[in-house]
Length: 382
Figure 1 (tube, rainbow, N blue to C red):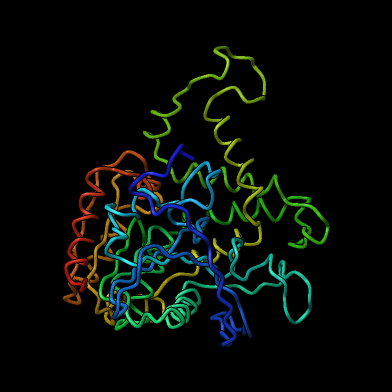
Figure 2: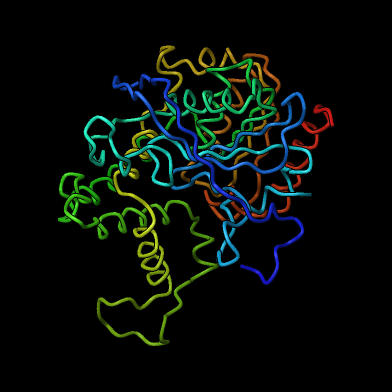
């Protein structure tokens, strides 16, 4: 935390929790009779509720998108470089909502929550959730907040999939959709990475078939390995080389299996910190939601037909070194939108940071993002 809160920060923020007792029938079949959603808001909702922006998070993200929870916080929210007064998504003009997805572990109902039917933690009994389910629950939250139509729904990676599904499922409830570093569905390679991560978790001796909390333990080794694998896929070779190279921790080779290279140390540190703040069952759920997302499936794999309902104006952004969600995958979305004569703007950003580039304050990326958000702001009454 800086000595003082920057002028362009949303400042100190508090998470909010809303209890929803309207049953939600999940795409996988089960019904959640009730559930909670954790969310945060930044800025002020205007008189006709036309300035609201929904931020959808990626796999390990949550509702804490910007600002600080306390003066002791070491870091602000995960997209703080984008959201705040005078920033890309300017909270002087917009009312921004970040929500923790169902199945999450940061306040929304998920595997670490109490199952009201049993009085016990859900654990592995929490049902499979999909991108469609998240959109349905977010629509209920919008109703509760008095937001009939979003000025924009914005997301990167898995969040971009949610934004796309919003535009398909509720075409009249958003005016713009921003799909960043995303894809219309996962490739076989991406599904394979997710399966390796899940296998690492499920084969950890402390996993106990997902009932680790009942055994008062955590599958730290498996979840840590999953996180290490994820980090490798989120970065480009160039970014890794520039940041770590082959630098040794102690300037000498020890000819053993302890951590010697800085990249090894970095991955170990990331895994160690992650396992203490993220739930393993939630990680399994989020990766499965990624795997299952495929809006074209119900249209005989015709993405053009799948995107036909979209009425929102679209901004699609990709990054040149993102090999997890390559520019070609974004261009599939763009081409399908163009085939439907939809209003779409596309930018491929030169960036060396890989998939994580969508989280970075890259000048050209932010310039394009800002220009588009200013266009949306110009449509919103003061």
